[in-house]
Length: 152
Image 1 (tube, rainbow, N blue to C red):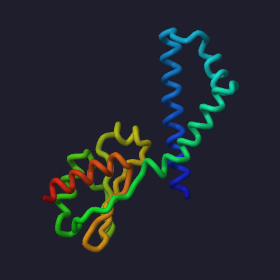
Image 2 (image 1 turned 180 degrees about the vertical axis):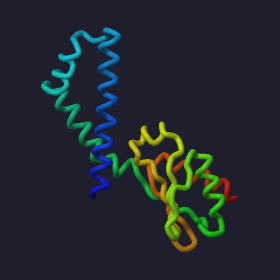
Image 3 (image 1 turned 60 degrees about the vertical axis):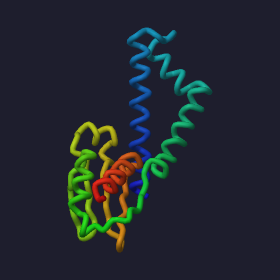
Image 4 (image 1 turned 135 degrees about the vertical axis):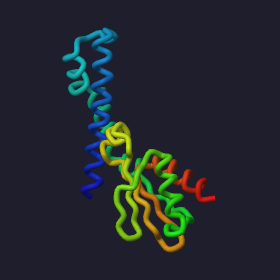
């Protein structure tokens, strides 16, 4: 539950920064009919603004379920460990920790970490004759594709 709430909060922050940057750009380029203070008053005090905030909150509440995934791949962790590490290295990840049959990878790029609000870890866990790969949906899809390609 704590992870879920942290991810919701992180997504709200990400959306808030994006909206702030859009309004800042509109104010600096004089493409808005009102001044900067009126923009935020319209956002938080008007019916349209309230509906927008409610939709953004609903999107943030859905993001941890939609934005993160676990994929199962028919690879053996002990025999293809180096191929997995190389595959994730080509995706910009390096091995951060190893605990038993679980490998945790972190993004090497500070920009990638910041964009994902430091929730960019990919976890590879051995499960019998297969592995499970967990993390941000788009990064997991890239990693699984690379793993399957390099393991052939």
